[in-house]
Image 1 (cartoon, rainbow, N blue to C red):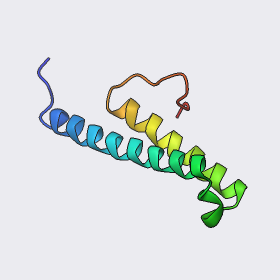
Image 2: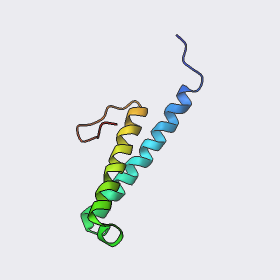
Image 3: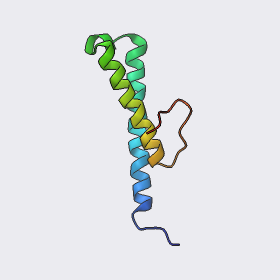
Length: 75
């Protein structure tokens, strides 16, 4: 069966969004590690935001065709 015309383009886009999501995850991890999150968030709102960030990484990994790691959330 021939490949659909837009599939390679979508794969490239999904990988770029995955890179962006990983960058965002790294940023929030850094916020947590150095304690700066306390200037911007309450503990509850930061935990909710981190959950959303981790979920976004898991979703983009799935869309990009990468296998989710054991620390990734199920979408």
